[in-house]
Image (cartoon, rainbow, N blue to C red; front, side, top):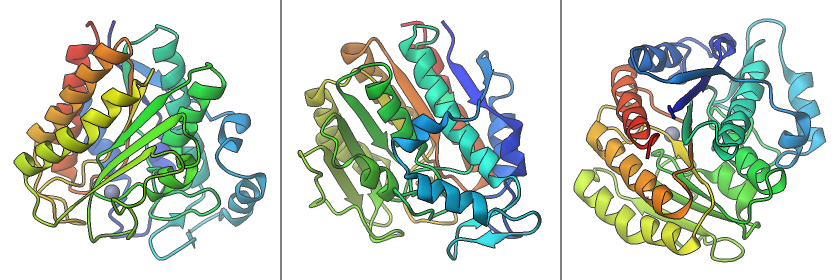
Length: 309
Ligand SMILES: [Zn+2]
């Protein structure tokens, strides 16, 4: 089997103001980097409303629809801007994550990478923030539990920012283990190690500015991989943000492509042991276009090496 790449050109219609780091060019950078790879390419569908409603209330979805502009931008907070095409892109981001889960659990693929923007891991139950509107990974996790009948799903988020939205959406559900490595202090300010969820199902690993690959790997081994193994998930979801890269303009960790390949390898190895290799990875951040492309390619190359395992 091949690794599935799920994406959609609607991502290009989510336009942010000039100079905004979460820009259309990110998508081109990722697509270009993955261009020559032997992947099964699938178009991201719009998410089904019932899938999104497991995470976000109808009032919030209605408010987003009402706020969407015909032209220009509407700012939901200082960082989060909506253009005419933003909601379609967001709904395809969630739909792509759900489709990836369907394909991996349905045996059509061993693993998948969902290359979409806007990202999702900062979107809380009823609050768009941090460039995010819908909690793609949380929506995918709940779909795996409720639609496919799984009992345990693990989410590992290695974006440089804490996945406060994912945590908000899953911390009260003991069927979901959420592990996040992130720089601290940094936006959004949450993600202390003391935040552990309703059933010790949240694992936060704050890292100081300047953390390099060796220290990152040691922390992941000690605090994330052991917990995922103990949890024995039936599916591993990844929030794959590449903004912990040393070249990233928004943060101060010092990872390189090899570190993203390493954690991908570690999670694929765990998945092979625990859950038939089932891994679904969703793009989150990553704002240096060159580093983003190289990192995404390193990540997906490891997924591909495990797709036939
Ligand atoms: Zn980020």
